[in-house]
Length: 458
Image 1 (cartoon, helix red, strand yellow):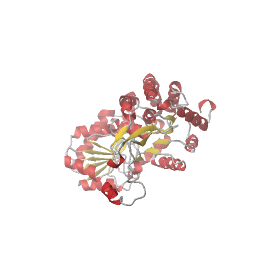
Image 2 (cartoon, rainbow, N blue to C red):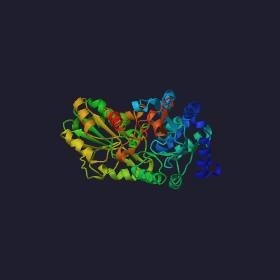
Image 3 (cartoon, rainbow, N blue to C red):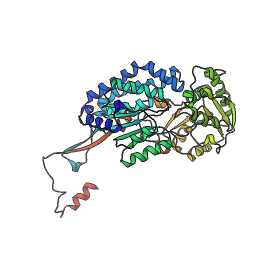
Image 4 (tube, one colour):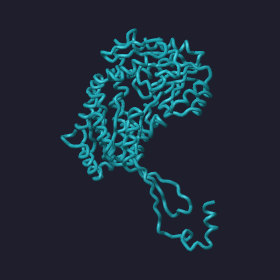
């Protein structure tokens, strides 16, 4: 805890700071976004080192998926002045003379709870929106990635006043203490089960929430594709960060006509990316801890291993693995895998693949590989998911102009770019009337006015 302060002390100090009005000033927000960008850039080496210790994450992956969050800062800096500008709205005739507009105002003191799989990026990304919208924020990094948690705490303390932005480290007990407090918004990224706990705690205070969860994101592979490009993009999206990505392809639905070629190309690509022994590759991460390693190792018992399957408990290594001969009642198809295991299921008709997807809770992402425009439109129309990426995987999350979030079990609310600003803002409607004249048609007595009212609303 900060200098012996309790959680309640920190929140009180932030409320005082917020009520001072500093955070509402546009120049203040721009300054703080620039400070955040500088903080990330100046501490890149420490961030890389922390993620290497926590997840054995390759340096390139850390830059590509964690430190690259500075692009979100740049996007916010480019657009913030237009975001905060009041938006005029058209008014009906009976409201004249007047004008109406919507202005965005900050919510107040917000809580951001980060996950362990991308422990830097997924904590800082919502913070960018909170700053741009003019809020104070408390960050709770994941204790499961302790080295990154420590670095985040050090960076924030060095660059920001804790009365404005503070980090609270700790385990489940600390999370419970935070959730017992009243915030103006809670932003949580993590699993569905914990998401329910957060939602229940927030409900006690009627606190609005954003839940970025996950689920089993399907990947449909049609026959009309470039096989080499498809394999490259699936293998990259699935096995980056050792599969510990909330939008990684969770399972493949492959047209039976192309399955042999896809299997062969996937195996070839895994070898090209990570070599004959991926455990020796400097480009392949590790499972976060013993608990997750044990859970994933059990899933290797399902189906038939096509490639991979090797494990090493001493360093939490699980090889990039393809599983065939999968039935829908197997454990590997009952839960989000969140690891380097890719089940492959074949279908004969697209209707089968769509039906299978729709039988499960709505996923955070859906992937489709096909050149066929009719198939693309059919999948978009007949399925529901947080987002869709056609002929690639994961890359849609990197587009600031595309709101990111789930639907149903995969999440509540959106962020990235303008969506982040909106998430941490209250959009206040304002109607401003003139004293020029005061028509009597709406006032009593009502005799003789019904015809006019009917014409106005007709």
